Image 1: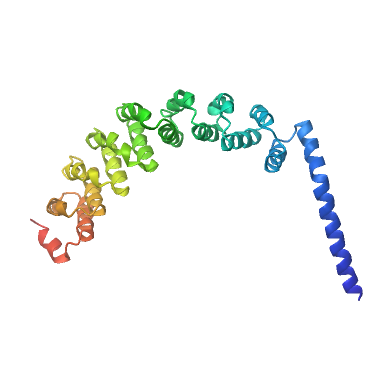
Image 2: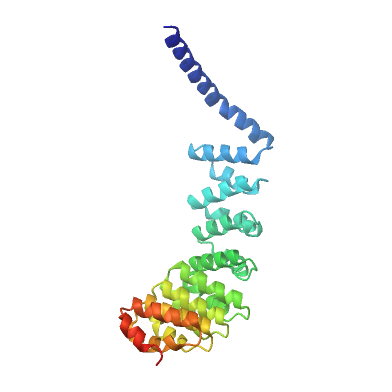
Amino acid sequence: MTKTLLIVIGIACAVLGATFITTSKYKYSNKIDATKNDGYMRDCLIVTDIEQGRKSIIELRGFLKDSSDWVRMSAIVTLAKIGDRESAPEIRKMIRATYIRHTAIKALVILGDKESFPQIKELCYNENINLREFAMQEMIKLMGREAIPEIEKLVEDKDENIRNSVITAVVDLGNKEYFQYIRKLFNDPSREVRWAITYRLARSGDKESIPEIRKILNDKDELPREIASWALGELGDKESIPEIKKMLNDKYKHVRESAEEALRKLGVPDEEIEKAKGK
């Protein structure tokens, strides 16, 4: 009996405690909001107020100038979700803010803010590989076909790192409409770029690149030759079997091994592969 009574009392105390915490939560949060001494807690308060419809659009825009990155990001995301284009000029200012620039750019793309194009375009040449590839993708999403001239400039850039990045950005975006603008990189002077374009387009299943990849089988450098045979095997190009067989006698072991693997993938019997060796 005593044990049962203690359990009942314990449950009652837990309920009362939860009620106290719930009723006092907003008083505490509002105090923090007023004193503005804790960005994370202000962010929590904003999110709660947004969810419960207690913040107006004008109030949300005001949070774009908050000192806390957490708060500004919450405001950016929410304003983008509700399609508030009037907030775009203020969000544009945050493209240069290191910790929230990705959020700002994504929001501007959602809002269709083409006035942010020059700033996003500038980041396509940033030394940070992740940032520039992100900027390239978002630029294409924002501008669509209007971004083609800029893609062509990136493909011609003197820095091979930029050229490599535009391959990654365009292919990872997944829109094959833009592949034609990067295929000229099959003839790039850099072996790393030729390797990258061959690998990326083969991984994406781009059969339109097969004629260019076949040419890479005869590349002067072993690195592109190796990936070319793999790529043709990946794409299921049986017409390239005779040319791949020739590579079984390449002077580089890794090229020979890649050719052998590709031939097996294309369904060439082992005895036929062995027969082709040494010819």
